[in-house]
Image 1: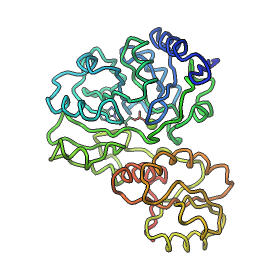
Image 2: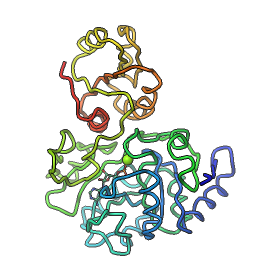
Image 3: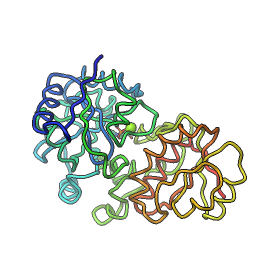
Length: 340
Ligand code: AMP
Ligand code: MG
C-alpha cells in the first residue's frame, strides 16, 4: 500500500484536514497528530475500518480502542447511561488528555471495544485532531500510531518509521506536546477506577472523584491469567529492542551502578550526565515531570541506536505525571525493576 503524506505544517492546513477527513469517512485508516501521541484513526462506526487498524498495528484483538470526539454533543452518540460526574469531568478536563470509560452505545463498532459493553471516549485538545474528526463527520477510534509493543510515536517521523506502507495516509503535524497517552478512568463502575495514568493526574481527579481507586495494574504486573479492567495494561509494551531495566533509587546509587556495568547505556536525568561514564541519554531534569513525559518515547526509540546489550532507565518519582512515566517504563522494561 502506498501511504500518502499529508503535511499540514508546510502544506495547506485546510486542504490537508479535508483530505484526511474524506479518507476516514470512506473507511480508510489515517495517522493523525494529537497532543498525547500520534493516533491511528478510523471511523468508530465501521467494523471493517477498525479491523484494518488492528491489522496495521499488529494489535492484540482483545485490547480495545479509544473513541475520539470533537464536540461534547457527540458523547451521546457513542455512550449511554452517562452519569452526571462524566459531564462535570468533561467540563473541567475536555478538551484534553483525559479518557472516560462509559457504557457503550451499540452504534459503535463492537471491535472498537474488543467485545466489551463499555467504550472509552476522549476529546483531544489538539486542534488538528478535532478538525480532522469534524471533517470526517464521524467519531474516530484511534490507538497509538505505532507497531504494537514498540514505543508510542510522538512525531510524524516516528509514525513513518513504523507504519509507512501499512496505512492509507499519515498527517504530518506538530510534535506531541504531552508525549504520553491519556489518563483513562472507568466511570461505569462504583467506585471510579484509574486504569491508566496520564497528564491529568490522580491528584487532580480526586477533587471530582474523592473515592477514585488506582487500579493495581497501574504499578504492578498482573498475575498470569488474571483479568484486568484495562486490557492494554497486560502487556510488555512501549519497549525498545534493547533489553531494558528500570532502576529505582537515589542519583548517586544509579550513577555508581551503571558505571560498574559492561556493554550498557543509561537513560538518566540531566543532573546525572556529567557523572556517568557509559553511553547515556537524558530525558530531562528529575523534578520536571512534564518534560520527562514529553521526551520519554523519543528517548526509548533512540536507545536502539546506541548498539549496547542492555539499557538501565533511572525511574522517575511517582508524583504527578511521574506516575504516568513510571507506568510506561515498567512495561517498557517488561516489569524488570532493580531497587538500588
Ligand atoms: P492506546 O490505544 O494505545 O492509547 O490504548 C488504549 C487504552 O485504553 C488501553 O490501555 C485499553 O486497554 C484502554 N481501553 C480502551 N477501551 C477500554 C474499555 N472499554 N475498557 C477498559 N479499558 C479500555
Ligand atoms: Mg498504544
